[in-house]
Length: 249
Image (cartoon, rainbow, N blue to C red; front, side, top):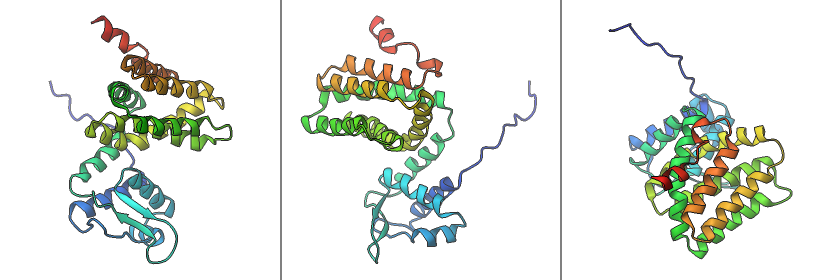
């Protein structure tokens, strides 16, 4: 039986997402190629009819995803340059990033649990001493007594992205990089809800790192699941310990 159209609320697109979409279009049509330099922040904001903060946020997202390389300073060499690895295949990653921003936190966190559980197990099996040093440096930065909330969130995001990269699976790493900005926003909200004391979250990161250092995949997955449950207690679908379910199968 057809009850007619199923109308749903229109989702607003934030200005920085439109900036990213326009850069994606320039890449897909070949108007922007590897090595090309983008206009300056002021010029690009004027050309697109948006504020400079929106351009700045778009540049930050694209740089984090490896699409752009930012040359700081002033003069003719300053500005953002399209990375050599950018190309038509990269537009799919950009589209994924923009699409993920519209999913509910429950869906994002559950997907993270599924993907990161596998990734952290792989990292525990294969991490080299250099890989471990990278994770140790991130955890040390989060444990610094004078770390700001913003810096803590940045390092938290970097920690989880690094684990995905250490899994050795390029698609998993790409997915986590595309998810990075969505994860950052959710983590900022989670940290704010937990209050100023991030001691429990710091302990969680140390537990995950210790399991990876011990090359214990099951302990690493369990520590990660416990961390996500602590950070997102309102997400009912991650409350059950999936590692226990898996072991009982």
